[in-house]
Image (tube, rainbow, N blue to C red; front, side, top):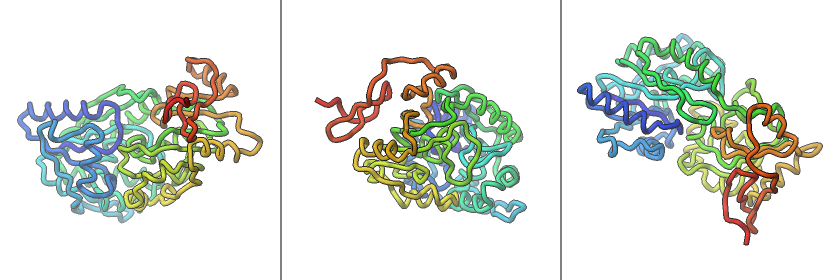
Length: 378
């Protein structure tokens, strides 16, 4: 029995996978983990195993095997001509249970976006499958994904999937066991739940948005465009528009994959030095969104990055917000002109006004109550 697991930093995903494995084992099955993450992990088997480990999903802890082979087989074609591929590791299993979060996608709008459907059709397709379906273009996904799901379900026995929905605080709010023949239907219904709980910024316009970090475990796009308003493929409606976007670090558990970095205006040398361009380019090619792999202006330090971002705003940059990443929107620091909007949206003031604190070397220690890097200056 295969348990398909992706590459996202989903709240409590390791616990959910552990519970799924235990339930399958109690029913007499012998589970095996099958990474279902398209081209992520550098498009290699060992890389995908490492992604799972960094998410806390460890085969040795669970007492199960893991088959991370990148080999795939074609199981059909959608009406627009793209081939649908499924990992041979999954096809070799008696059955497959996908475990995934249902949420708004970063690049398209449809009745079904990120969820069990996308994991089965693109995640389990590995690099070749992801590239094949993405060649239809995100604008065609409303038709492509349901058609591809039919092909996959005809080739795989999927008795059920485990669908997860998070709240605005990146906490697991809902877990549902979905019968295999209702995956498309429930993905659509749970997407509405996910939108209702989605954590966005409480502002229409921000002159400067500062993110401590980005990465694949934060969002498939490195940082969620539904939060930043910066879309790498095509512009979609978003609550907030950021005039300048400065990103200071790449999460270590991203494995060097910095897809999405191209939508930033300024990054730091710290971030650039962590980029694995092979992994980033593989993701860009698989998704067909090359703009996400471009390199923005690079600053020597955090202080310089903020100086460049604020200094390039026409007419001044007095509306600014800072947060750890686009998953953690419940805790942020803002300048005075944005306080009223935050309070109206239900935020609470938890500290007194304070200037950003930097070390002598220009590392950002904190902005307000949001912690960044470095130590207090002596």
